[in-house]
Image (cartoon, rainbow, N blue to C red; front, side, top):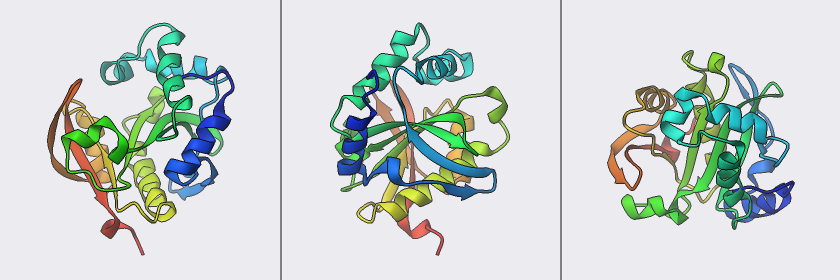
Length: 203
């Protein structure tokens, strides 16, 4: 998951697999204008590695260590077939979060729950500590889930699988309109399966 300036491959894959995540543009939210921008390596590596070494983040992402650890994780996606698109989340133009938008139905996760075609998954971390603990995650999760469902007509559900120990994350998904759908025993964690259905999309 690392590529020295290879975002174009990820963008093409994102277009084929995920209906062009990089081209979705800005989404207005109560917190400001939000958009996803594909990760660029090596330009974004120091920023991402700094976030991954924050103890609060490292406890669940398990990517602490030298930048090469984060680089391997991101590069695997950038060099892949586009089923997972790693992005920076920009709020009013400032990078403040890291996202992975992925085809859950084509992911190993699909072996652990009753996946449906085009299920789209999301992973999120809020980078700066000042961005956490004030409801921002829920605001952005709701905005992105709505955007996914509007941009991907074949997708009926947005799913997530936060660690059950990460109570703050689970609550953020709930406040963003995701419903708990049980717990999953995954190879690296016990996860809360969270689902937001198309029926919840505002008119």
